[in-house]
Image (cartoon, rainbow, N blue to C red; front, side):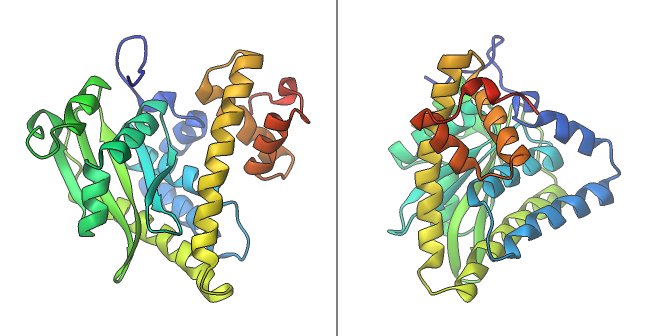
Amino acid sequence: MIKTGADGCVRAADVPGADGLERESQMHEPQRLAQVFVELADTLIEDFDVVDFLQTLTERCVALLGVDAAGLMLTDQRGVLRSVGATLEAARVLELFELQIQEGPCLECYSTGRAITNVELSEANTRWPAFTPVAVEAGFGATHALPLRLRGTIIGALNLFGTQTAPLSDDDAAVGQAMADVATIGLLHQRSLHEQTVLSEQLQTALQSRILIEQAKGVVAARAGPSVAEAFTRMRAHARRTSTSLTSVAQAVVEGTIAVDVLTPA
């Protein structure tokens, strides 16, 4: 069962790094858009932290598009979709369920290569009979999905969830697709920097790193007492303070070579 807040709902305020997103929301719209696209352009450098970048992408979608949660699926080296990032635990678990049953907005978006917008879950039982009731139980009322694609190459899909049925405007859908396109270009660009296998290796590394990070979140939560979401925030903050990759911090936590009490909030 997917866990939500005490009141049975999920909300953007529960997203790790929400303080930073709140500060961004105080900017004028052109400033926010410019900042986000500059941030996403970091993928064009030769070496970058894939896991942290993909998490940033989902968080910025929540900040800019007026949705309550976002999740991301990418294909591994065998072409199988995997969940690699989400802003809320409820969204992450829902995406894992979607992969398990092979049904839902991300799967449909990836298979067709077309965006899915403004689907009210109360009316989606016929479309996704297994996925829909679980999504509604998690507190979501609407869903959207945007493909990560470049021309004929599709490497994943971005899932957006809202607790209400407020529609995603055409402008917001265009911004969301633009962010997904920039992310796709950045990932695919690595092929031109290295051999043809680099992209699949990077995505596979991201998937393996995500498993390690999930284990580390559980260790920090068990030993230090914070929520799983707060455990992730602390590890990420420590990685940035020490100029260390998030994966390296997670590895140290799991191996016990770093004390969890040094993982303080940003």
